[in-house]
Amino acid sequence: MSARPATAGLHLALMATMVVWALNVTAVKWLAGVMDFTLVASLRMVCAVVALALLLFFSHQHFPRWRGRMLLLACTSALLLVYGNQMLFAKAMETTTATNAALILALNPLINGVLEALVFRKPLTGRYVAGALFAVTGVCLVVLNQANAALAGPSFGDLLVLGSMLSFACGVLALQRLSRESNPLAINVFLYAVGALALCVHSVVVIESPLAALQTLGWRDWLVVAFSGVGATAFGALAWARGVAAMGAGRAAIYMAWVPVLGVAFGALLLDEPLSVWHLVGMVLVLLGTVLSALKPARVVPPPAVAECKSA
Image (tube, rainbow, N blue to C red; front, top):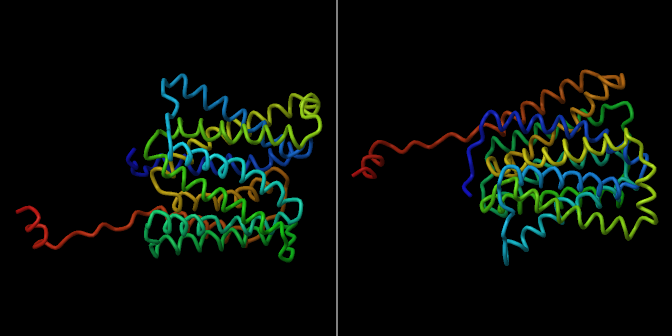
């Protein structure tokens, strides 16, 4: 499957996905307050798989028929992108602060770009590096100027956050390779099915009475689960997969810098949390970084003599 060019619609879809993901942070916090985080992740991924499978069925598309190396790559991507990312981050939040975690996750664009350059031998342009640095700086300004910011010293939890981010980034690189062979919908059905299965097995082993925990959920909790699993995870995964296939992991990852920025904005709108001029500066830097990274590199036009030789 050849990479498709990124369109204005795709950029808008990625931006809309970041808005939903920022809201999903609040949704996951809500759910984590009423049940074990492992169970939260399992329910979200099961809902995502059901929604994606229904889309695959009604669109008359086929389930991937990978074998050998491609099947191994797909299973590895699922475990890294879904299971590893969720479990490492959940464990990390037990021993580090939200501020530390947000600052480490702000490095996502740079790490994704470097890994993509190493794996696919794709050169890092000065425009991309500048855009990523602008985005990282903007996120740091926003995170550090929150009223509840609590920056702590280095801890094992910080390493787990970094591990969670690397797990996600490596899974995305595998996703980028898989996108050459299958369509994003079929890929995501497989990845989230494998990831959800691993999370469910983990929940059954770790949680003493998972069914009893589910019975305590009210209708509001199930609505939040549905939003998080279907809206944020399933449809967000489709937009993300299309973005990675068209733009590459590095350029698509720049958009992830918007998640903490939008999270602070929603906090101000919904919870009357205070904003300062530094939040505005940070948002402008993230916007500038996104625009710089989204611009296509200038095409090199061969001299007339070279063009004539080729046409001869």
